[in-house]
Length: 544
Image (cartoon, rainbow, N blue to C red; front, side):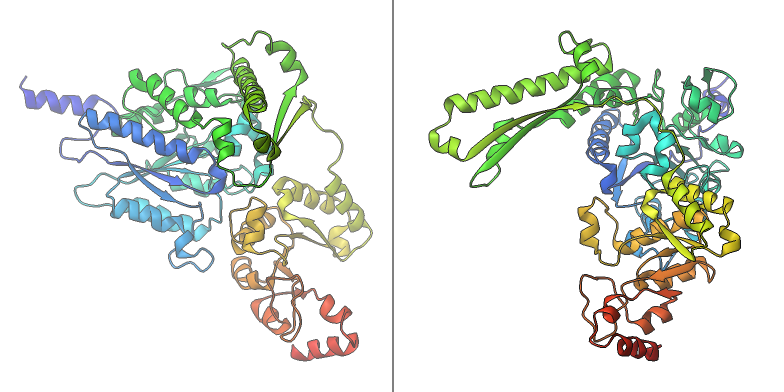
């Protein structure tokens, strides 16, 4: 057999994902979501890509390309609801076309608003074929800091974390259909994919979590999965996406995450341990306590060392930490931090001058944390309250959309079991207060603009089956276009042109609000605090 026939046979029989001799080796790129909810995953991704690329350069192989984009909003081209600068569609398209990437590994929380039109547009992007280039692939690595910290608890906490586009009771079919027909894969720990789309899901090697197995309808207490998805990706890129002993952890400490899970695929299992150690050391690096305090410019600095502990863990691990166990290692790290803080405080007391001591005050606090495993029982208080008001024949009642999909669904179910339908009670949800600006939201930990947050929450309200939302009139037009005439829009923050805004920030006049699509205007102080309330009301009605 000659050499050319031997090569042809190898390329034919080595499995799915291996390229023919005429095809170009696919390029691989990481699209990193830099939204605040991604947390430490942002610097970790950057560091891992850098170290993996050092290995690839040494092997004479193409490097992984890295592009960053804030958010996971997805709209159709020229979308009015998702501005171009916030539309991930353009970032993905640019990665394919400008950077010539063939497989995009999108590390994202999928936060933001994703429209059906946006998903359709992205699907068309993946279907584009270019001569002499491999087919386009999209790997969605759906992860964010809080979801990672929740670990297996994410199964019950997803709706508390926020609107989840991959949740079974939302619209997962569109996301999985997006990567069907060999266009990609979805990677998400502790997720149950739709049965029809399990081939598009990155299962672990095995699972023995009873709750997850029951949720998926698996009869066994322990099950091994087909991991051909990882084999296929390895054949396409010669990168390892699933470690030899990797499985979803029930809980994580920092060391567990860095040493037992794969974030960025890598070329060589033998170098994986040393690379993980380098990443962990880099992520753990910090200045000393005194160096940190010296950077703070203050006339008098108060330093509070607060130590939280669970009594049961303290008794078990404090004297002789079992460092083979992740909890023991975590306790040992905590003990070392406490020791460092005490030594620093002692050293400062012994060496500082009287003037330095006068400019710095120390306090210590020990906080006993509760260990709570018992599930909360009893009816949902919001649902119970909604049922009461619905049975009383109240015309309209609101809940808060930030309470999450599960809370709103429970309220809707309770209302439906009452006389809501016959009494005509409308169940709506408050999105973002009209007194809040983008800056106000950021101070509460919400990275989206007020408009984006309203649209984000309205999606969850609509999917929960409620009748409408409370929003500012500034968002009314987009919501009306998105949900149609039957979705109620109740708009506070109404101010006549000559009225004082008071504490309201997102305002429109009555006429502007009605033109934008508002159903009900909520007007308070412009009438109640007017010199002539009746005249103020009549003037307002005349403007309509």
